[in-house]
Length: 572
Picture (cartoon, rainbow, N blue to C red):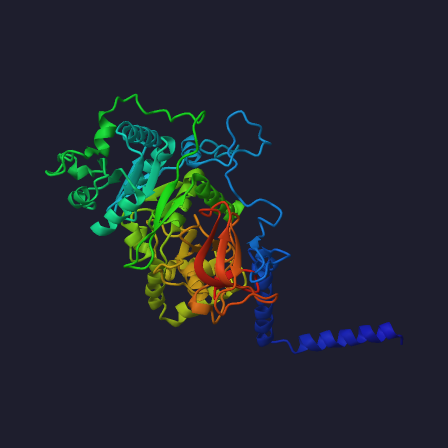
């Protein structure tokens, strides 16, 4: 008998013996194993991004100077290429192959009212502008009416001799309209942080040399300011619907009539219906003037005044647009909610990016003070939120308390493991059950929130968020979270975590997550300071930022950081 005959005989005897011993337990075990293997194969998912892209997120210059680290840039803006400085705006009739202009603030509003320009089903789609009043009342503003307000307010300020316009308003349509009016009518915009003491307001007006103030009754100490600040020449009240019947044009006794007082609504309603419908042409106009921002540090400290050019802000907007992958980019289907103060350049830049992307934007004056995300999103269903770290931390603490049952904890552990594998759990039986059973509600339509921006403020009093807290928040909210580092003299963000970076790390310094690589409009270098010294193996020291979005092109940020092994920036 040959070898193959013996092999076949052995196989026959083995199979016969196997089935001779087969019973119900064998069937159960075989079915379980086959089902497990089939499930693993059928549900296997690739990570959202390649792990190599997370392992080296920034590019270091090949040469470093003594006492400094290499210069670090985003992989999307490598050395030898210019940093992201503009929007690539193409004027009508320009070749589609042309590079396009960098653009300025006026181009953002022109894009908002023009709608989507790219060919496709969304071509011509325009975003909506909403104001949330109270719990359920949502007001939609006509883009044509807002264009008319921009023109009429800008022309009114100009006709009254205004030059430097202080905007002292909560998050509102009027704040953004005044900013655009200053851009179109060659005025200097000064955005003051809202809800400040009378002494702080007077100090900021003096330092900025403002001659015009746009503000709301009840929040601006008019009598005190007029007596203490003689350079004020013009005041425009933004009056709510319930107070229109009052006479807001009256000047308090003792001011000598030196201040011209008017209301936003009167300027808009008393002008001819046909006036202000067309924006001023771009031809033969100079670049918009600077925008002055007051950086809020810790309570009790004097705010730092920073002047940003329109080019600084546009560069920061371009970097934010580039930070979101093309398939997930901000678009007409999104509703953006700035739930942090627009006096912060990070929130302002994100709002401008939403306008330019033709996304809908909702303004809620109470959102920056909201205790958590659920309260901030009251009355609407945002898909993207710019939130405060404090609100995110409160949301995390309140939601974690609800995960007390064994089922909830086990399911959260499974979802966390999926995140650690680089896969965001968006659909399927477990993610859907997790959402319906344990996830809190954000907005009027649960499940729509997809992206949250938050920022650590250098020198501010924002609570720090660890990578484990950010991981939990991604599961609690069902949204990806981009965590940024911001500074006084940098428009937008210095650095921010990647869209697909869900990693969790232990023993983080200062209990704070890393901040990802620099944005495409910034490059950073670390200089030796105190005990922090740079070497060929270690980059650490005072953070210096350079680039088109930096006021003055280069600035020391006043914080000490280091570059991790994955080339992301973190506090030292």
